[in-house]
Image (cartoon, rainbow, N blue to C red):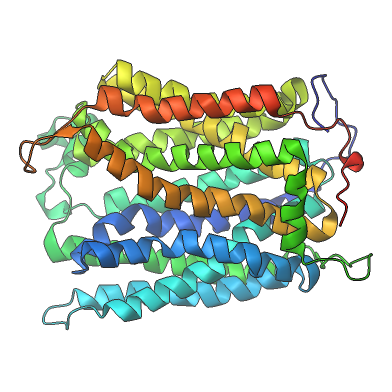
Length: 459
C-alpha cells in the first residue's frame, strides 16, 4: 500500500486485452455523463421549464447518488455480478436518456406541443437512478481485476476523462451556424476563422434542437456500454463469510468508527462541496475577468486535459508521498485556484488556474477510490465506494446548491440584473478557505494504518 516510503510494484502488468476492455469501460462510462451535463444548463430553460422545474431535473443526479448508497451498491456487493449489473443498468438508463433527447428534439419542431415536464422528469430520474450506481460499480470492477490498484487504476481512469472531453468538445463545432461563418481566407487565416466559428453559434430553436442531440449521444453511448459490459471480466458478488452479517451499506457506515475514516468522510464532504462550487462559479467568473462567453466551456475543459496527465502520474505520486500528502495536495489545489482567482483577477491567470482541476480530482477523489479498495472488505467494497460517492455526487453537490448561491447573494450589490456587482475578490476566498481548512484536518488527524489487513470493525 502507499506509505511515506517509496514502493516499487512487483505485480505483473495488465494484459493488453484486459487493459483495453477496462479502459473502454471507463471511456464510455464518462462519455455518457460528459455528453449531456455541460449543455443541460442551457437546454432546460429553453424547453420552457421554470427555475423550480430546472432544479428538480438537476437534483435527480445527487438524489440518485444518495439512493444508490442504500440500494444499488448493496445489491452488487452481495447479490449480483458487477458486469451484469452494468449491462442492465446502462441498457435501461441509456434508453431513458435516448428518449429524453428524442422528445426534446421533437419539442423544438415547428408547431410542436409544449414539453411535458413530468415526462422529462421521469426520464431523467430513471436515467440517473440507473446510471449513478454504475460509477461505483465500474470502480469496483476495475479494482477487482487489476494486479496493483495503486499502479494501474490511474492509467485506466484517465480514459474516463478522455471520454468526457471527446463527448462535449465536438458540440462546440456542431452547434455553430456555419451559414454565417466566412471562409478561412476572408477570416484572416486559421486563428481568425476558428474565432469566428466558435463565436457564431446557432440561435433560438435551431440551437436548442441541436443541443438535444447531446442527450441522444449520451443515450447511444450508454446502450453501447450496456452491450459491451457483457464482454467485461466476470466479477461475481462476494460471499458473506459471517452468518447474520449486516447489510453492506450498514457495514460501510460502521467503518466510520475508525477515526481516520471518519476524518476522511468529513473532509470529503467539504472537498466535494468546494469542488462543485467550481462549476457553480466558473462560467460567471471567467466572463467577469474578460474570457469571451463562447470560450468559457473550452477554458473550463483545460482542467480536464490536466486531469489526464495527473491520472497518468498518480501511481508514482502515491508511491512517493503516500495517502495523506497526496490527498492534501489535491485539496490545496482548490485553495490555489480560488485564492488566485480572488487575488489576481486576470483572464490568463483564471484559465491557467483551471489546470489545478486535474490535481484536485486525481490527487483527492481518485486516490480516495484506491484507498477504499485497500481498506474495506471485498463484500462491502461497492457500498464503500458508494459511501464516498454519496458525498462526492450526492451530499456535496446538494450542500453546494444550498451554500454557494446564498453566499454569492451576500457578496452582491445592486437591485437589478443590469446593476448587480459581485465582489469576487472576497467571495472566492470562502471556498479557498474551506479547502484549506479541510487540508489542515487531513494533516492533523488523518493517520491511516500501515496495513489494510489490520482494519476490523466489531459488530
